[in-house]
Length: 169
Length: 382
Image (cartoon, rainbow over all chains, first blue to last red; front, side):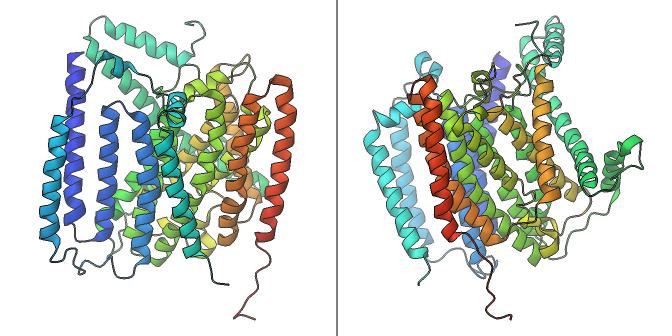
């Protein structure tokens, strides 16, 4: 079984490298449509990471929502914006360096918190079978408050979108 | 358990047992994975080839002609002849095309179509992987087709391609929502997302299509599935009388064949998933389990071909209105009916949920009728 373990690690490494490479492509490619496609690859790579962390449900939701819905809308927005697919349109402005520095600081904070967190990985958490029932129970009992807050936010966004998008009559 | 295994499972187990004699354990695991992958990779394209034959034959019959009958008996070798023709055709890439995107799109479109086969239980113990999120896997992976179609349409640098791609995206985003909503009652009834467990919950004739909510959810799911795979009457993205061939206008030869292949494999997969969710999967008497699965799936595929032989194409506003104003509210309310069915005791729930379903159907139908498209009035052309 050791060889399989190594293969799994190798697969995880490849997925991570692809994700990182695609992330670089998102911000460096000239054509914004290609950037969107690279972003899809990043999201798929993140989903692969979730799978390697045994969070299959999370991974599938990631693909369904981010790749299936949000990225489709992003591409749609790109299509509806004239000339933005042109490679002569610059992708960066003068603030890019500043934002890069701020993001680097943010990364330091992020990596620090990742290192500080004690990852409670043991046999019990690894064997936990998360099915639809368990998730539903968690949403309706333990996490009901954040769940409801998110629902309200989404409803507000939906109503706002409908008001903005309705035809004037 | 051993005796009731279908023949394919017996063959796989036997060969693995044989290999176990002289190979280390990890190679046996790899061989087991490879066997499943190979089976799917062969099954998908072969199914697609004969679906084209079936479609041409059945549509031909409906149009009172013979269909292919020159190559082989009943034209059975026609798909092979077509395949050879496709392979030898010239590969044309438009001069201004985005080369990479144009090349990648047909490859990308086949991958999800093949991947979704891995969670469909073809028979007892015949799902390639029993994921505990199998249903979500299917729904999530099949959305990737949209991206591939859009890559193809954008990469071609062709107005008709782009129009087709935009139509495809708008249609798929719209129909995905009622599609996902219509499977929620099934998850509610079974408490699991695993396709294998969903089939097992329906064993013994307790098919979900026989319940009031299941009947309508099955219809909605199947219709949305037909829309997802761009088949008539939802074939606006490739409506040949309006936009040549839509997103695959600029593709020829094998690349076109790959788009075609993905479409037919998705059609098979959608039918297979409808069977899995609502028609009891591989459950059935006398015949082996895989035969029941294929029988039910081909019955649904026949209905798809029947649609194609019968129905005219939707208009864009009709298409959107159908999804957003009729299917979406109906599927949302259908979830409540399924919850009623779950909560109430056995004989009472049929009556109550049946009445609730009928009332909801009437309300949604009459509410949507006000907005349903009427005869178009032309402003400029008169």
